[in-house]
Picture 1: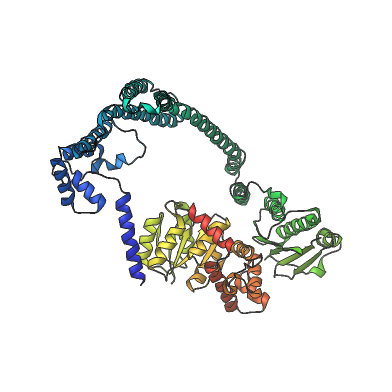
Picture 2: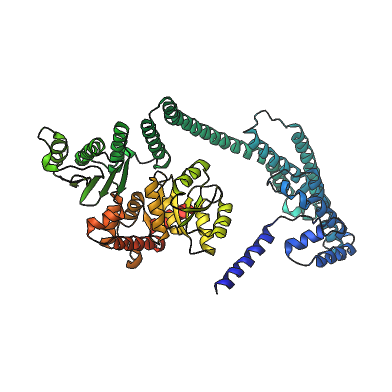
Length: 408
Length: 210
């Protein structure tokens, strides 16, 4: 069952690929230019049908020949396909002529088949050609505007001015002839039609230009924002990564290099992956991570922090952060462990933190009175804040400090 | 000897890991890009593949997906510099049986590979934290308790892992056998891969869109 499903899917994908592929002229299977074979491959039908179609259309007043010529000019050769695939290239002169020929072919065919609208057709054709020239100019212009972002000195006004002129002239002629031949429907009100046509011509002539102004404005704003982002990133990298790399090159203590690299890694990671809206020091996890970075830097021992259910830091939780920091420092200084783990879990009722190392451990009863680290900075501090601290350790079995702060 | 295959686009890291692991494992091959990796893995059929998450051409996700389509018996351990939850979760949901960061100690990495080869799951403390986070809030209304919730015991095992304890220590601390710890972690892996919890779906889909 799976196999059928897969092969069905495969077939559909192949078909999609055929339909979405670009029409090209075949190199292998050609009588004149390979157009028929190209069309057949694209549509997925035998080539002979396409050839028969062209031949029978040729009988209809030479329409087939014109169509074939138009297709030949518009369609790229298979071999050129790679270079043609870059979308949005301006149409080449050949392609423009080809399109015009195709248009004429359609007109001839319509005339031959008896669909003809009388003398209005040729002036209308002129208007359409004029409009096409203007539209072509406007899209070429927007392409240039895009490329101007990278090549500011590019200048290509001459051709487009000629095109505007020709386009406008063709349109004017077309409009005049249309108006002149509209005797039969004068009841509609010639003035209204003239106004409409003029407005349409105006929009065609100046519409692209007005639109272009808006586009240019937003392009420039986007470019400015990108430039600003790039500058911010460069400044950040300069202050952080480049400085650290310089320090590493000047250091000959491997442990120090590792610490520098780790601190930099942590910093860069925060900068890259933390959501920008959230101020990292504004949460319990952020504050613990900051304390961990400091311990790493001070004692050259990596501290791995895992936070579950992070939440905003309020004053009531400051003692927990401070005690965690003290526990990390103790572990880094005395345990001899290669790394320290910190696990913070925030729930609705409380915030728990475990600071764990797998170092030498100690016997809690044997700590001398004058060593205030644990009793004062951790146990008493948590007790004053209404929380608790449990220190579990035994020689050679590592140390775990569990801190708990009830929420208020 | 367990055979392994390495996939990473960073040559330096690749040669470092190769040197570290070549004593304990039979290094069947390595690749630096996605397509070569898929071919190489299918040809060499290693027991375990160490795969980097971020690579040009689709990344570790497409290596795991493509190979598992044809060779569902090959096991993957994801290895990355990224701690971003969506990366971790997406790799696991694509079929990787474990996730560790590149800063892992060589011995711990070797243990992780053995564990994966034996069919178990490997959770780094970070991954355990993500899972607890993702499964922590209220259960969705139409939840499948089998898949969308962790049992209290599974939760406790994950907490111990998140606190930095190895499986053996977790077993001692919870007075259970190492085998039981492995069973719990494998059950969590299965939930992670199959659950429809929206956090997991969201993480995974965000990653696939990119």
